[in-house]
Length: 183
Image (cartoon, rainbow, N blue to C red; front, side, top):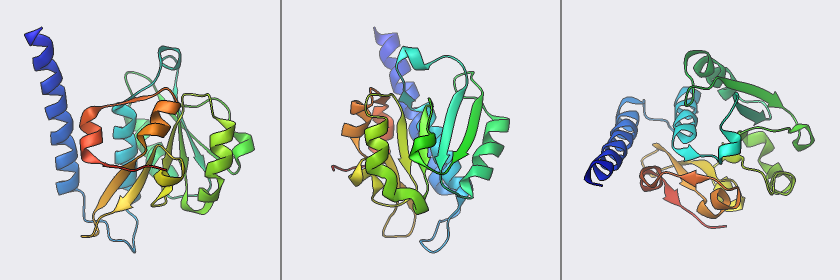
């Protein structure tokens, strides 16, 4: 029992150290500019610290990007170098909600943020994590969305209800690093 608690504390410490280093070492992201490499690192860590149901833990880990964004290039670079829990990462880009098939994570670009309601209807009972590029999208139904702090540093909002509705589990350490919001 004590060993299990030590392992949990060690994991939480590792998560917090990683994000602390990410915040410190990532150049300050100003509101006027977007550092898509930083965004892609956040997305990668979201994938690491969110758990999907057992039936979604086999095969490739698929990310679908709705709309055009420079994050596609960064995520494809990351996918070529990393795996998620031993699984290959596949990055696909689409233009509409109607094109969505089975996937693990949907990244909604700023230009397509208006599709959030239609998207939630389409994937209502599916275990898919929705990440919004546009600030405030977690308040409209995305599970996670990027935010800019008062000091212009990059952060993220968490809609815990959306995560739970999609039968996902988020690490408590990740919750501590973001800002909980409600719809």
